[in-house]
Image 1 (cartoon, rainbow, N blue to C red):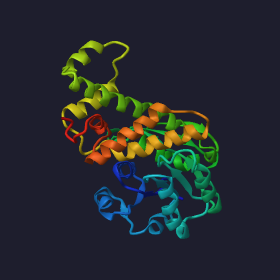
Image 2 (image 1 turned 30 degrees about the vertical axis):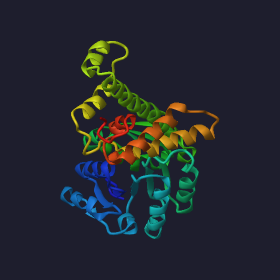
Image 3 (image 1 turned 120 degrees about the vertical axis):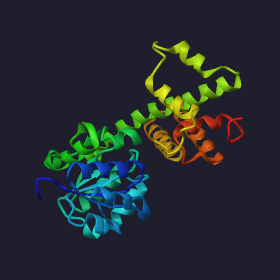
Image 4 (image 1 turned 90 degrees about the vertical axis):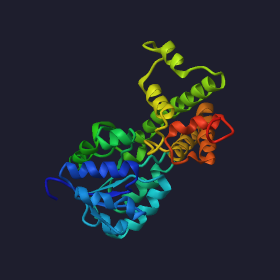
Length: 296
């Protein structure tokens, strides 16, 4: 291996494309693949080589980075890549896959001689594009020198949570963090919806809490996206938020924890998606408070 690892990026949606672009900017050799090739093609202008199949993308790669929809999709794609995977290569699994499938993913890595890193990221489109994600990582010391340039290219910092990716410590922390993010997003939508229903100017609400302990930057950011009608392109889509909320609920149920807010949040996202807001920013959960799509 050269001083800079060859990186295969499997999945070039909102997050994966931004991560691949930053890997190219860091001077790493990048092979990119996406099931819908059109989503990967623009990365060629940044220097990435676009592959037709997962196997083509991972051939000769030192690091395989997966950023796909969910854990089942990750397993499906990695099985397609399996014939070309190099034993001893590093697998940085960054998809938010929840905690239930971590054992299956780690077992796949072990069966194919890969060094497995449980490595979800915290952040949405804007920090991903700026290379300012936070990488939550768990994996062996053995491969960290190889994977660190990758994490450094896509993130502002890496928070190590353990030395065994199979334990899922990074993914479990990601679920805890996402439970807070999604709860605040849902509460923001409900608050603005109630203001509309009660004919209260939302700016009066912001004035009321301004500078106090109830104020927060995330509340204002998501409110701005909604009030200014900037729901597309999505920073984090409603359908993906619903998927993550259901992973959180399942993780709680599997560990004896009842999560009423997370369960209700998942249903809000589902209603918003059914109204046609699925590919809009998750702030569009606001519309779930109304019968009509436009919130009237």
